[in-house]
Image (cartoon, rainbow over all chains, first blue to last red; front, side, top):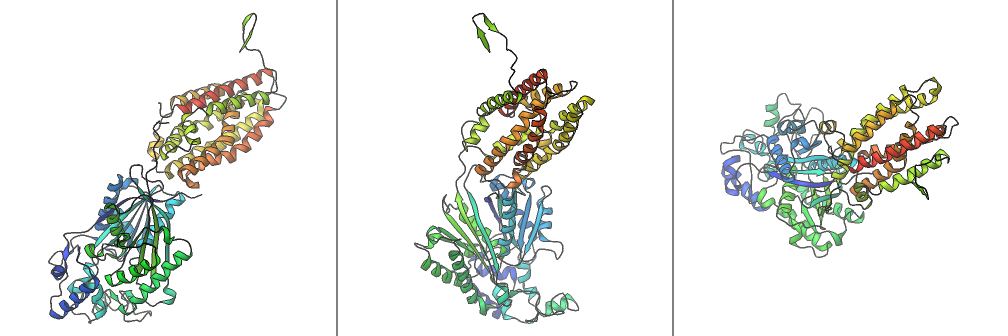
Length: 379
Length: 232
């Protein structure tokens, strides 16, 4: 027999003050006319109005990624009324930690404190958030830990600053993400019991699927052109500066296949329906991570055609106000949906995280449950 | 209690077979357990994780003494009771690590080791433990078979039921109910071994009385231990 896992606390941390579209260049640089034109075009397309950067106006990084993560976990713990010492496990998700070695989760644990705990570093891109959640939920369900924290955290601004672009071979496909990604962290507490004082989110299932067997790399850094060969990755150049000059330290996106990503993602959703994991008649909320509003329209329209009574009140994203924070975004969105009272006991929530990296998809199905009734007489 | 036209008559020796007498003690014990508040709540499905946490915490403080009094009893059996000594030594060894199973469950539901280890016996556990050490300290403490009859019977017939019920009501994983479920499995073997002792010729009338009496005391003190949770 396995236990049930519940999300009992949520928290997020977004560094600094929100940065409006016109102020983005004050952080990331890139004020020449061509760059500015590209930036405006991309900003108009993705629909993001404001985002957060752990970077000051001099382009200096103000916080470590591990700090963002630890602050989000601390916020989630506070939401639940727990301390770091109550945790048995910490599962982290990030695209790129502060260091090459060791793993991000070890660094976040060191920053967070608490006692001995299991750590897991899930890397990848956006869907690593769901991989980390899956690991934590599985260990809770096995009864190996009573409480775990999951955190998605990103500090991509340091990869997007002008200094990563000057003196570097020009690649237009590096601009798409430059004006889209931003910093932040979101966290959830996972427990084997619902919280006694407020509703919790029961985790009904978690699912992560890679389709890399039939798709080429789409979003990447560290790869020279399309040359997936020994000696051609960023670690194989004579020096790292050479790799940087060749554009290997930029995050690049093959935007031509993004339409396909949306379609494949919808096919994955259909599979969930076919497998009975999603009941269209009982699906109350969809919280979807996406990089640009262009996808929102495609996906929203498709869902509205499939899910009876599906309208804007059942769809949630805070891409426009919090930016695209990669592995952190699904928790940052869930935190806001939860805090603002959108999710009521009895309702179901589908979390959906498509990842363009090499076509992978993370989903989780949640049900809002009310606290257990406490009996009046004590034992 | 017996009364006649002459008024009060003290209890007479019960000459029925020992197993029949113990069977009555067991039935009485079960009836008493049904009155224990936490077990009533459990049966009603009206327990929280705090109840399970509390129960493990309270039980542990006495469970750690289990192998100690059995070992003491073993050391008090002379050569004429060699088989009982052997059985007690074997049993003490099995019980010796029992509290570690409980500890695993306690940690798996989020309890802290230092809290568990710093716990004290509740008033029922104090009485039970104190009584058992007293009985076990007698020469050839055959009466201890009565205590084992109750405690092993509880493990074989009740603990598993409680463990499964807690798991069902609270949605616990197997890894959180080792102690209670293990008892259901291991104690079935123990009670089998004990039945051969209880039915052997060497249990004379005095020994049978001592066994029944000990079983009655242990049954009552065990109920007290389960009722007086956190009363230290």
